[in-house]
Structure formats: structure tokens, C-alpha cells
Image (cartoon, rainbow, N blue to C red; front, side):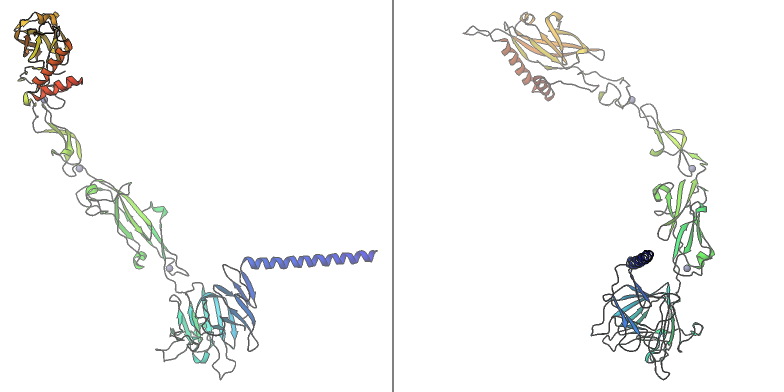
Amino acid sequence: MYMKQKKKSLFSLLLALMMMAGLMQGMTVETKAATNSVQAGPFTLSRDSGAIVEGVDYTYGKYESGNRNSLTILTDDITIAMDENAEPTSDIIELGEFNNLPLDSFSKVTFSNLKMKSYYNNIYSNVDHIHITLVGSNELVSIKEKSETYGGYAIFGHGSVTIENSPYGSLYATGDGLGWGAISVSEGYGKSDACITVGDAMSMKSSTTLMADISELTDTPQVWRDYIGAGKNYMDIKSAKTLLIGMWKHSHTWSYALDESKDGSRILATCSGLGDCNEKDASLWLSLSAENTDYDGTAKAANITISEDWKRLNLPVPEIVYYLSGTDTKTNSDNSGAEAVGGAPKLPGSYKAQVTVGTDTKATKEFTITCKHGEWVETVSDSYLKTAATCTAPAVYYKSCKLCGAKGTETFTSGNPLGHDFSNNAEVCRREGCNEKNPDYKPATPVIIEGAGGEWTKESGATLRFRSDAGISSFLRVEVDGTVVDAKNYMVTEGSTIVTFTAEYLESLATGKHTVAIVSSISGEEKKATAEFTVAKKADTTSGNSTPNTEQTTAQKTKALKTGDESPVGYLLALLALCGAAVVFTGKKGYLK
Ligand SMILES: [Zn+2]
Ligand SMILES: [Zn+2]
Ligand SMILES: [Zn+2]
């Protein structure tokens, strides 16, 4: 019983261990998949995007000759890395497969801390043009197996080889492949223009001996088409058997920022270039200053001051651009007297000087130009006008500053009063706002505008009306043939003054011509609008019927129209009256109210 129990426990423990091992294995695989990273011998292969699949992106295995393994890269953008502290490997790397032409076409690979040491070519490229980026310290050593042979290459290409500008990496390479040094390409395998390129920011040092120490690398070699050497020309083959590429040549990349402690008037520069900058301690500043000044008619410019180091390093000294204070409006000749748009201002005012360094770092400085207004002068100009001249008062102007032209508060008069405008027998002055009466005003005589020449027939029972163009408020009385007519004999209605005689009164008049006068008071004088009319005998009729009243009225109106025809105004007024339209006159000089 006890034994059985123990056996069972042991079995359970083993099962648990197996499960844990399986779980751990699963976790490891998961981690690798997440980083797109795989291990191939001493190499870790990784790529930012996309999984790396053996047989598709690379192969790793025994090389066809010798006792060594080969990593063959088949696709783009793979980083081949070794542990920084790893021992050198005798494996080799092939970029692309050596097979029938054309050469493989992928083009980018990154070497990270590779340490390779063997009798063979360390890197063997079968790619049309491989671009190698270096990360960390890469060491490719192809040593000789036998002293009498040339030995292999550190990098050999059937196609072109470019070492890219690599701010974070370097390559130490040594080899004497067929006497051409550590790195070479060959046109012998179908690419007749195969060549070597080294990025222009990568420095090179070399030695003509194999396995030279860094301190022994004193030559500065050149890249010839298919090899790298320190000779004076292509044929002067002093092959770089040991080569160090990529002591990164720092280049300054200036970044600008406002100096927070200086009110936005000072700009600081710092180098953001890759690698170590030898100007880290330089004092790099540009300062904008501007004085508040008195106006004197000359342009007032701001000043730029730069540090010695700013000058020595030839950092940009921009143009100063001027704006009206608090706006994005550049100065110009109208708003500030500046001679050019954005130029230094002359006129009194508040301004902002501004400089822009780099893409968008702006320093600004506010300043003012003030006029002391030493002398006020009397200058007649619309811009200084306080009140224009009137009938009785001359124009009033503000005094202005002799220097800057600013408008003051004291005033002066200029010129004479305009005098009243009584032209064309105006009743009052025609100027706006003046009601002065014209002492020489001659009131015009009103006229009969309707009813003149009218005819009235005895026993017709009709009325007869006359219309004066004088306002009804000025009506005094009516006269017929020079005799005042009793007011009971007519009716006065407005429009302008309409007098309608009663039939009874008309019946009292003798047949024949009569004169009617509508008397009005015009500007205190009695004025008469006169017209003639006829009282006719009753016509002899066979039927004995009298003419209806309505027809009489119509006949008279027609007559009135005909009379009016003689003067256009009368005609118009008559027509308007017929239409029943309201006639309104607003002019002061008319009689119609
Ligand atoms: Zn720098
Ligand atoms: Zn002034
Ligand atoms: Zn007036």
C-alpha cells in the first residue's frame, strides 16, 4: 500500500515536470514570435516587421566544402546579430544563393556585433547590390591557412557592395583575398560594373598588413572600383589588408530654441547631430535688442548680437523683420514710414522686431518710437479738421506736431464763413442746417391749376370748382369780378386749395365771362390766383330734358384737362388729381403743403 502510494506520487511529479517543461517551451516560442527573431547557430536573426521563416528567409547548415556551417540570407531587411561578448565564429554568411544568373535581388542587410574568424571568405555576396548597415563593432577576420596562399576575403561580392552611413556601427575587416585586400568585388560572375561604395560620413583607416592593430592603421585608403587600397592610383595596388570603416564623422545638426530666461529675445543653439560633438561646450546664442527712442524722422532698427562661437561656427544671422506691436502686420511706408515692407520703422508707434532661425524659432523684441511734440503748428488739412466752415463761422482745425504731424488738442480757424445761400429766390438759406430767412425773398403769385376757363350752364344744378396751388392754410377769401364772395356760397377743401361754388350762387351770376380770384396770404402778402369762367344760358332742347349734373361735372373736368395741357405742370397735377393720387410737396419754397 505504501509503495503503491509512493510510485503514484513519483508519477504525478514527473507528469507535472513534463507539463511545466512543455509550458516553458511554449512560452519561449511565443517570445521569439513576438520579436520576429530566430536563432541560427551563433546568429540571431531579426526583422522589424514580418516573421522570419527558415527555408524562406534564410537557411542554416553545413557548407558544401570544409567543416563549417553557412548562414544564407534570402530576403530583405534582416539584421544578423551576435552577442557582444561572444567568441568569434568560424561560420560563414552568404547573402543570396550562388546559382544561375541573374544575381539575387534583395538589397538590404544589417550586421550587428558580428565576430567572424575563419580561413574562408567571411561574407560572400551573391546579390546584385547589397547595402550593408553596421551596428556596434563588427570584426571580420579571414586568416590564412597556409602562409604561401593569398587567403580569403572579409567581404567578397559577385555584385556591388555598399557600406551605408552607419552612425552606430563600425567594421574592422582583415583579409588578403587574391592580393586585393579585405573587401573586394568581382565582375567575373556576370555583373561587369560591380563596385564598392562606402558612405561619405564613414571614415576609413587602413594598413597593408594583415591583422594589424587599430593603432597601426595609419593609411587613409581610397575606394577604387573593385577594391580598397592606399595607392596613388588604381594600378598602385596597396591593398587595404586591414581596414577600419566607420569611425563616425560627426556632422553638426543645429537645433534652435528660445532662451526661456531672456523674455523671448534670445535664441540658443545646440548640436543634435549623431555621435559625439566636439562643440558641446560652445556658447551659442543670438540676442535681439531694441531701444525705445525719440522720434527724429530716421529709421529705428533693432540689433542682433551673437556669441563668438556662433560667429566662429558660421551659424545663421537672419534678417530682422518689423511688425506693428501686437499684430502680424508688417511695417510699411503707410503704417510706420518703413522704406520696405517689414523694414525698420520711422514714425512714432509701438513695434515688434523679430528674427527667425532654423525652421521656426523666433526671437522678438518690443520697442517704441515716441515724439516729444516740441512745436505745434497750424496746418490746414482734412485730417486735422474739427468742424467745417458754416454760413456764419469759418472752418476749425486742430494744431499738429511740426515734427511728426500728430493731431493736437488746440484749435485754430482758417478761411472765411461760407455766407448764406439765398440763390434762386430761396425763402430760407439753402445750406444744410441753416434756417436763415432770405431778406430779399419775393413771394411768387399762386395760380389756378384746375378749373380755369370752366363753363357753367344755368339751371344745370351743378357746382363749379377751382383749384389754387397755394396751401390751404394760407387761404383768405374768394373774390368774383373783384367782389368778395360770402363764404356761404362756396366750400373750401384741401388740395392745395379747392374752392367749390354752390349752384345757388352760380345761378345768381349773369351769363357771360367772370373772373374768380382765390386770395391767399403768401409770406404775409395777399396774393391772388385768378382765372376766368363762363356762365352760359340754358341750351334749347327739343326733348326738354336738362343735362344731368354728372355730365356737367365731367365736361368741366375735361375742360380743365385741356386748359392744363397748355402748361406741363398743370397737366400733370390735373392728371394726378384725376387719378385720385395724393400729391405731397416737401420743398420749403413750394406753396403746396
Ligand atoms: Zn555637433
Ligand atoms: Zn510729434
Ligand atoms: Zn445760411
